[in-house]
Length: 133
Image 1 (cartoon, rainbow, N blue to C red):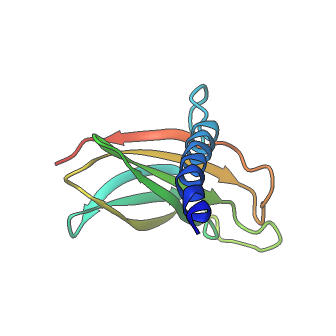
Image 2: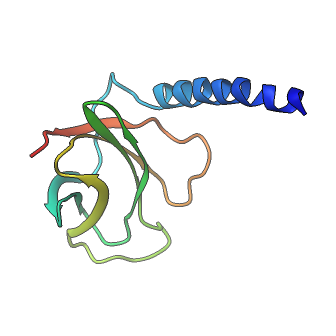
């Protein structure tokens, strides 16, 4: 019984290291974000992402949010529309409410993937910084 509980701290430390390495490797600091225009606004005291996509069919997903001492990091994936479908050539605005209060500064990272892409996902790239209220 003692032996099983002794593994818990070691396992927790290992998972923390793996999570930290995974996070660091998925951010590309050398290139700029080149996807649809993204801005931040607020609603009900929370930060809100506003994406201006060139056509309907784009899927916006908040993958994760990391809270740090001075700010919060928001990681977003934008999936291109299904190439087998027809879409009107009209710009579309999509709004996604985050869980981050406007009292916290945020840094937004995003990546753009092809429709249905599940493997070899590209790294996130920094989109913008937003100071707190």
